[in-house]
Length: 191
Image (tube, rainbow, N blue to C red; front, side):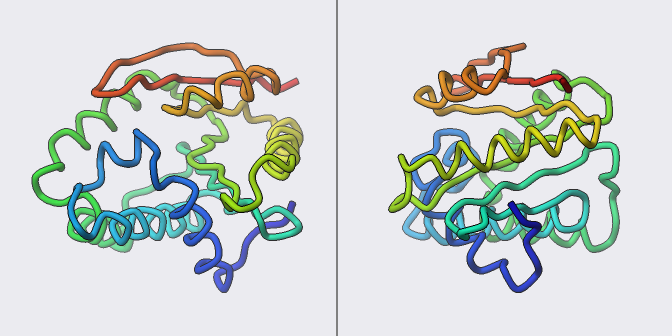
């Protein structure tokens, strides 16, 4: 695993755009129209920028998988982050989805503990490379990093087929919510 650099942005955004194309949680906030794929790309662009500023962007050594990590205790409102928020609304969410997106984010924030954590916002593998253990290797490296950083990992997923995968890596479900889809909240304590 390596930390991504700014010049890796196109690769990271491309992997996430492809791997989250049918994700229920992503499509819940993205305006569903003819520009849906561009909107997902805009969300991933936003997420990359936020993690470069307030977290980490990791790539697998073979550049086939990536993870976006944010440290909520280090996140700040800045002029730049506010501009990213506005850009996200215009390019990805759309005005009609602002209310439900804000409600969802408020719900997630109210459920997450207010402790120093490693928030695994996104982890994805290029769809052409899935099923080869690349994502598992990257997740294990993130777990090792969280242990050495003394930060538990928190995440949410709407992908039911990933539930056993997270269980296998020692994650525990600590909450579930029904939106128009089911959202599972996972944590993994430092070991």
